[in-house]
Image 1: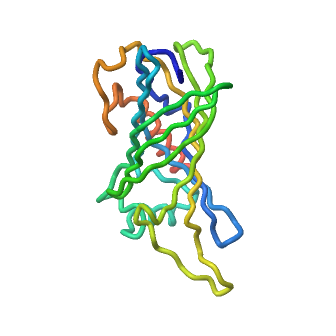
Image 2: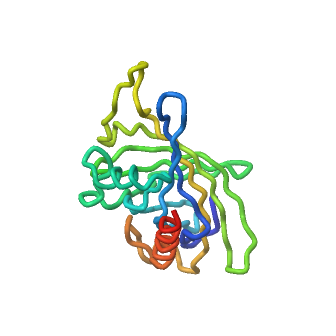
Image 3: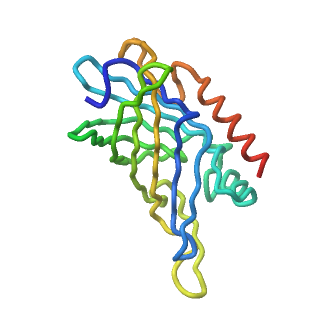
Length: 209
C-alpha cells in the first residue's frame, strides 16, 4: 500500500517538479514548473489512483527571454491554446523498501501518452497532520507530444535533445476525506489554495530575477 486509506492532497509549497534535457549536445538544460496541484486517493483495499495538473505558463528555466518563447510559441507549449499539462494514473504499485511505480497518461498540447514514474515513498512526521513524501523519476520523448522543433548545429548533432528527464518531489497531506467521496479529475482538486500559494511564490521568484 502506497499510503493509508483516504484522500491525500499535494502540498505545492513543499513539492518540486523539475525537468532536464540535453542542450548543445554536451550540456544539460534544467528547469521547473512553479504552479501545480494533485490528489492521491487510496481505498480501504489499498488500491490507489492519482491525478495532477501543471500550469504550463509556470515554466522556469532561469532565462526570461527563453521562457517567454517557450510559453508563447506554437513550436513549444503554446500556453494560450494548451494552458495545462494533465496526468491521470492507470496503475500504482507499492513495493518493498518503500519503492513505488506509477503508470499513467500524460496529456500535453492535446496529446496523451503513457509515462512511467519510479521512485521511493516515506512517511514524514509533521505538525500539520499525516504526511507522505514521494520522490519520483521518469522520462518522456518530447517529439511524441508534438514538440518537434530543433536546429542542426554546425558541428553536427542538434541544439536540443529529445529525451526529457522528469523529477518530482511530492509532499502530500491526508485531508481526512474518504476515498471515493468525490472522484477527482485533472484540474479539479479538493482545495486549490496550495496551487495559488505556489503560483504566487513563483511570481515573486520571477520578479526577483
